[in-house]
Image (tube, rainbow, N blue to C red; front, top):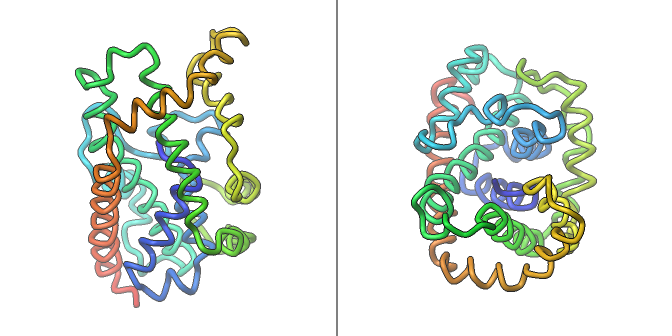
Length: 252
């Protein structure tokens, strides 16, 4: 699903749209939350452990509802620290963009029965598009460096139960280290190896050589206006759900 840079850029824009003081006061906790579901990639956890979403069947919004159902201590925002509430809003932001991608982009263009499903490199095509969007997002963030700086120490005061303090502290360092401005295409080789673990070095290099061709192909199938529509819908869903979550706890 979308990468770190895209999640941070989306969260910064969504946070401004939401316009709640808790996001401004605790931006670091908010941004840490908006990346934390992907800690599972570094801990070797199953996706549903942090995303609470069934890839093949769930509708948009199911992840956050299941998260609250399985972790009732998080349901009332008025019973959480302000840092934890900001973190939860960021977490919600992450789930919204991931689920929007799955429901509006993945299932339509890459999933079973979709327009690109028969391509032997369909999983790579999806990730090529996401990598391209992540590169573009990082360049568009006015103060990415400042945003990453705000994450330092943002694990303090966050108590969610499902992820312990030590993991959050470790994760903040990974985010700061890996979400910087530069994202050269040669780093995509790691993604190819993860998607095609049995591929030889030569086969991986062949896939890497096809990146321009693959990007052109996938962009022809998914025009920019469809990407903009997905982004807007995910942002609208976030603002609506975030307001409902805050109102339930009457957080000002």
